[in-house]
Length: 139
Length: 139
Image (cartoon, rainbow over all chains, first blue to last red; front, side, top):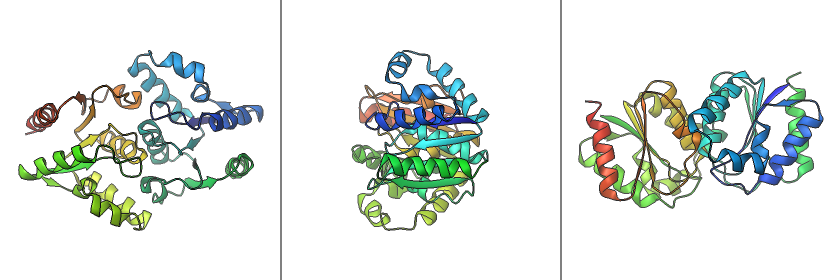
């Protein structure tokens, strides 16, 4: 399945290790993670100097092309907020996951869209289960 | 004019003083700032316990009802990213302002929408000028 993974870039990389785990696991399952670079610190470093317009156009094209979005929302991020909104409004299935114990924006937790799933996790195993359940529901 | 002011809530309140300055100045000019509570620490504190769905529905209704949006994007925020995207996609005039020297998401700086203005400021006076120029362009 074509999956868009959304995670914080400019907003902070505190949760990079979990982005890597999540993306690597999806790829190992055979999914095509369009935005796999978001989990890759070297690619992200290179992209600092990229043209903002090119990055925007590419990412938006990927959001519009994906069959599902998984957004890791533990780190507040303008880009993730934008992408999540775009995907939900266009009717894509979206899973927003956050480390438990963190404050999550009500613009996510209060969104009643039927194609949106919001959940928290306290371990990698719990996260894996959330992702698997979400993807199983789509097939 | 009916203006939606977007600023970080859950994402962090480091720039609260500038939110207050911005909203108070708009109100003194006679504008109706629908989301004036975003600049008010007491209102924000009260809203912590509010129903996420009610907050979401109210804020989205305001975004959809406003004639223009001003978003202060110095603090990464999922909610601000969501609101900015919703307003730009629905064709509203949007001004995104950030303290200069901070890294801004390419999902904002790379957005080619003709109804979006992105700018940085290094003083209150500079911010005031950006806001005045933006609003003048709409009248």
